Image (cartoon, rainbow, N blue to C red):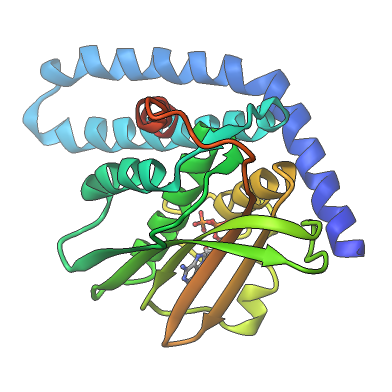
Length: 255
Ligand code: ADP
């Protein structure tokens, strides 16, 4: 409970910081970016690398700011019935870019899968985040499986009350996590990735999204075997509208 409180306080602080700073910071980054862009063709060949590295650093900064902004917009969730098939298809398209050649992407969707009551953009971002973590966990390649099944909770589980759920899962055959890593993954800014590669916000963001949607998140991981993250999302009463395709919106937000 104490860890949860600390986490909530960190999130609150991140939210406030974001609201005050992210917008201005993003403008500054864009100004630096334009400056470097104008400069690039004029610098001598020998200095090109410096400009390119600076542009990359600016892009990393912009990505971090974007994630912080998604974070602070968390309370503005707009839940509606979402078809997991459409959601997974959208993520699959985005993944083609994000995943390197050696990773095979598989899907396991129950034929009678129900609609989930979630914000479609945030749901797609959440699954994308998990899939990118899975990819990062398989530098030598492996299999990434995105699943969707119906499930019922007879008793409350974590933040989720008893009831009907759609469980979205992202499984990898990657490096897995040691217990001391697993126990810290929900801490904002906790990362084991290299500087510039990880922000340590992904799983905290996903966790905030699922609990904010009235669901729960489970992580199972074994070092050297792999990891499965399951998102328990409340089942929608009504079916999803057929034209509901969150892919475009999420693409803009994921950058
Ligand atoms: P980031 O990916 O930026 O590090 P996250 O909050 O998404 O931030 O993840 C935190 C840490 O949890 C990662 O740095 C990594 O150590 C661990 N992790 C997350 N997903 C996986 C996974 N699928 N396999 C192994 N480790 C993982």
